[in-house]
Image (cartoon, rainbow over all chains, first blue to last red; front, side):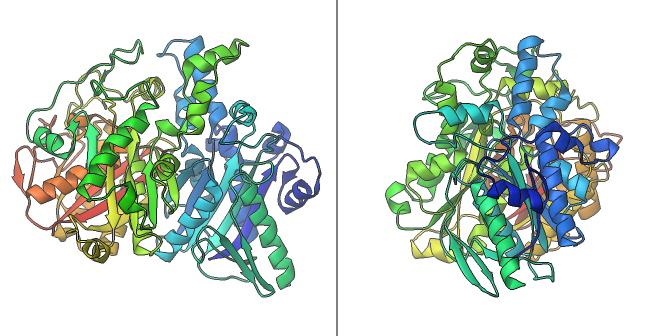
Length: 257
Length: 379
C-alpha cells in the first residue's frame, strides 16, 4: 500500500512543518496547547468533541487534504495506547462529585475508545469501515497491519490511519512506573494521520508494507528500501513508530523527487 | 469455540439455556451503583479478585475454545498464531478508588495502575501463550467482538497467520452502568428486543472465543473444521456518535459486503441472530435494515434476553450462539418478544423454528456508527 497523505499535530503546531520541528527540536513542546487546537475550525455539530477526538480529527483531515484524494470507499483506523483517558478520568471525577444519576452522557460517550474514529469519520465523510486498535505494544504498527489487510481484502480502496495519544495524567503515571512494561517517561503528545491507498498516486510518498516481512515495516521508493523494526516504545512517545514512519515517508518523497 | 455469559458457562450449558426460559436480571451484587438497574451478572467466578475480571472471563472462554480445537500451549508453539480480541472495559483505567485518592492528593498503591499496564487483552494472551503472531485488541464499542472475529478471518484469508484466537470479553462495571443509564437506554425491567413495549437494554458480562484457521490447515492437523466463517462486512455510518442511522443504511451496507464476500444472495441466509438490544433506536433501525435486505419473511431473533448486552463480548458470544443454532439446526424463540411494534414491519420468531438453509448471519451495531455482519455456514 502507499502512503499518499500525511497529517500531523503536536505541541509544535499542525502540518508537515510541525512534524519537522518536532523531530528536529532537542526538546519538543510536550503538550498541544489549547490555542493550537482551537485554531482549527470544526462544524457546529462536532464542536462538543473532546480533546483526544479533536487531535484525531485534525491529523486525519490534514492527511486527507495532503493527499488531495476523495473519501469514497475509504475506511478509518484509529490506533492508540491510552485513548481518551483524560475524558475517562473526568467521568470518574463526576462519579465522585455527584451521584451515578447525575453524570454527563456526553462525557460517557466521549470516553468510549472509538468516539474519536466516529467523530473523524463524520468530519471527513468516511464510511467504508471504522476500526479502533488499542494496546501498549506498538498499536501504530498494528494499525498499519490492519490497514494493509483491509486493503488487500478489498474492504476499502483507501484507509485513513491515525495514531494518537494525549500526555495527561494517566500517561504521566504510567511513565513513572519503575518496573516493566517500561512506559515512555518523557512523552510528548501528538497525532499522526496517514492516508493509505491501494493504488499509487502522484502525491504518494512511498510504498509501505507491514505484511512483507514478519515484525518489520518495509518502506520502498524509487531510491531504495528501508526496513524498520517497530519498536514498542520508540524514544519519547507511544507513537514513536508513527513519527518515525512519517519522517521516513517524507524522506522517501524527497528522495523520489 | 468457547463462551461464558449469564446464559451459561460453556457451550453446552449456554445452548441448553437458549432453548429454555431466560433468567430474570437482578440488581448487581458486586457493584454499588445506587441505580437499581437489573443486569445479567455472573455468580461465583473462579479466580475472581486475583486479576481483572474481564481477563478471567476471557481465560474461561479461551480454555474451552482451545480444548474444543484440540490445541494447547505446546501445540500452538508450532504455528504462527495471531490474536484479535474485542473489549470496551479492559482498555480503560476505571479504578474509581484509585482515582479518588489521586485527586485528593494522596499517593495510592499503584496496583491498579500496574494491573492496567498489563491488561491489554490480546497482548496478555500473546504473552501467556508465548505466541508469535500479531496481537490486536479492538475497541469498537458494542461491535468489538464481531469486528475482532471478522478481522481475524481476514488474517487467515490473507495468509498472515496459521491460526487466530478471536473473540471478545467484557465485565460489568460502574462506568458502563452509570454511563448507559445517563444515556437513558437502560430498561428498568427485563429487556424485550423488538417488542412494542421495549424499554431499553440490560447490561451483562461474559466472553466468547473462537479459534480460526484455514480448512486445509485444520485437516492437516487431523481436526474436522466445525463451521466456516463465510463472510464479514463492516460499515461506518458517519452519522452520529451514539445513535445508528435511522434508515439502517450502515447495517444494510455491512450485510451486503458480507454477502458479497461469501458470494451469497440474501435468500441463502436461513436466519439472523440480530444485535437486538431492546432500545428504541437500535431495534427499529436494525429491523428496517433486515427487512430491506431480506424482505419481511426472514427468521430472526435476539439472544440479549438471556445474556444482557455484554458490550465488547456481545458480537463474539452471539457469533458462537449463531454457530451453535446452525449446528443444532433450529433456532429458539426470541425471548422477551410478545407484541408487534408499530415502528417495524417484521417480527422475530416466537417459537422454536427449524433452520431452513445452510447459512446464518450475526449482526452487531455500536456507538460510533459501527455496523458489522458475520456469515457462518453449516457443513
